[in-house]
Image (cartoon, rainbow, N blue to C red; front, side, top):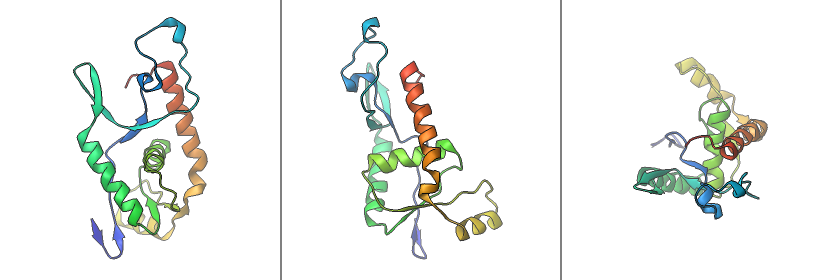
Length: 151
C-alpha cells in the first residue's frame, strides 16, 4: 500500500526462522550428535512439510520478495511489528535475511486507537534502542532450537 509518501507492507507471523538441523549436515536422530550446536545459526524462509521433506512456503517467498524490493527502494524503515520481543524478532530476522542495512526507526504502540497511532507517529524511536530486546528474543529463539522446541 502506498500513499502520502509512505509505503506499507506486512509480515504474517514468522516469515524467517532458524534452519533445521539437516541444513547443518545433521540427519536423523543420533545420540552422539547431541547437542547440536551450530557455530552460527542460519536464517531461512518459513517452510511447510510436503511428505517427508520441508519446502519453502510459496506465500512466504512471495511476501519476502515484496519486502526485499521495498527495502531496496526505501530511504528509511519504520518498524511497526507488535510491541514486544517477538515482534522485534520477526522484523529483525526478515531484515537480516534480506541483507538490509538501512537505518530503522521504531513505532512502539500497544493501542490501535487513532489517538495512540497518531502519537506513535510523532514519537518514533531509534531502531537501535531495541537492539537488546532483539538479542533477548534471538537468545530465546536459539535456546528453543537447541532443546528441540517443536516447529
